[in-house]
Length: 491
Image (cartoon, rainbow, N blue to C red; front, top):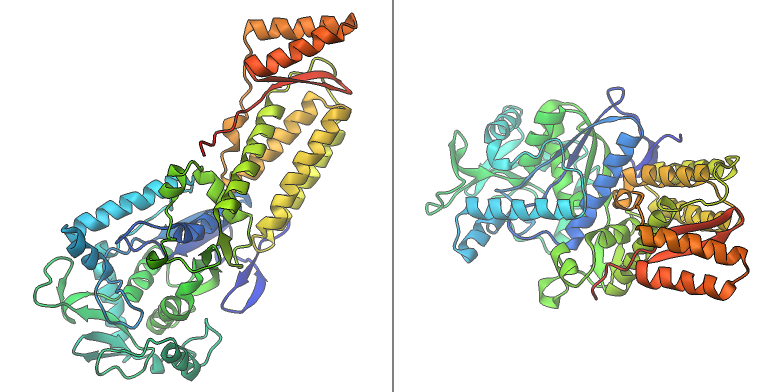
């Protein structure tokens, strides 16, 4: 099997993946800020992370995946000003901040389940890790990286060598970038545009999710949370950090700065960023009414797995344009795969039972090509083309002459492929027992064919399809039958 290679944002190149500790891999993923429902753009990120994790497991690695839950500290703007997102929602919904965080965490987990995503081994909440954050802040303070203004305790980015290295920009270029991005409104006393708060002072009227500490009464900054939690569970230096491309210039840049400043070690070896999702060629926004949730798609009659298929049909480092026409196409394609699975699983061979393994070898070859493509920086479009080649070639081979051994090889290949894709192929791989009446009709048709009574033979075949959804096909190896899977779509 080809070695896994990943595009590393830090080096701006594709690199062969080499874990720090043998076959053990540590992954940290920036999880949701639980102030609202996750939208389909958010979920694209987690679908790709799930694919990467499944591929690593398939490749024989032991994976420890950590994904945080941000339930405090993430402000509305990137400029270290504004209100905490969870607290703001609590005010609007007339709930406590704890109620808001619990509700939207639950909704996020429901979406993960709908998409058949593997839950991380650890999902730490920010509010449960304040001591770890304070310990990290203390280290930075001792090393002289922090200063205090009236809004909180800040990290002086000018003191960290190569600040902004993840972006490929110099310190001055990154400051100019933030200014040009209209992020110039800063708290008074801030030394550099790129400086960020590690601890924020609370207002007198804020009582929930505030802590009395040596650095003042308040709550942590968003960036310090991810560093503290990732290093607690994965160590000061770990393998892979994932997240959306929007986190690159600020959040992930600041994670590197504070983590490496505190430990003196390299923080992460491989940075994997997932590109944006657009809707009808435009950025998602509430004002445009084009923000969709997984539940919205389901209510419109689509399956969650159809959206998942749409996501993996595109390369993760390219922007994905979501349209309902594209989702319709993904649904149809996925239903075709399910039907094919059902067809091959339920083939009843009334002719040749065992083959010479010729097509089984071809299935094995296409499987190798599929995983070779995936191991090439998660090249899902090419990988899926190998899956569809398997289906197309199977259909052609089956017409010429197919055996149980060939069918088993195809099913086993598809199930192994789906162990990484997670699209639910196994639900269609179970063999069905047909009613006695159907078996009798099939036998009668064979007798009619032997007697050259082709009119009756055709009548029986039509009856089987219309009444029992059973399809009969005549092949070079003799007749086979399988169940026809009806469309599951309601729209």
